[in-house]
Image (cartoon, rainbow, N blue to C red; front, side):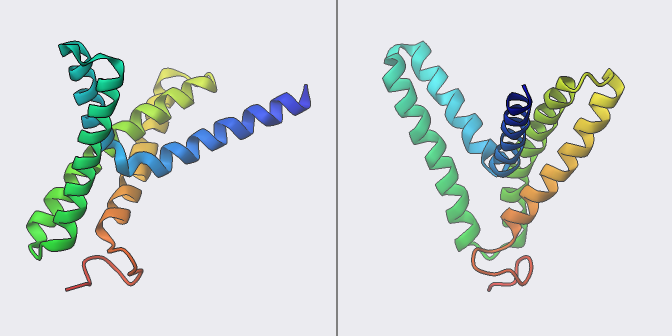
Length: 143
């Protein structure tokens, strides 16, 4: 009994870490999922839909990386960052809301925890996207 309780707590904790780390990729994931779903509904079949979803999601991710690494315009870079952060905030809110429901919290506390989680996950996604790779010195310092 104790072992299963510890294992369940470990599983929920691992899911929270996964959600926290994957929030940056919410935009490519959502667009890839929608493209795959559209492909399945248009007759591509499950294998074709999965392939289309991975290709489109990967393309969106690579496009964001290319724009972030090649442009010098801070306005364009911040636009791309916000395009990636907004779905991360939505995904963070929904994920924390559902996890708060597991603890049998009241509806008001579920929304409070979800709002706090959305802010934390959005701030993390923003920080990860705005800081250049290989530079822990600060945001937008490579030119």
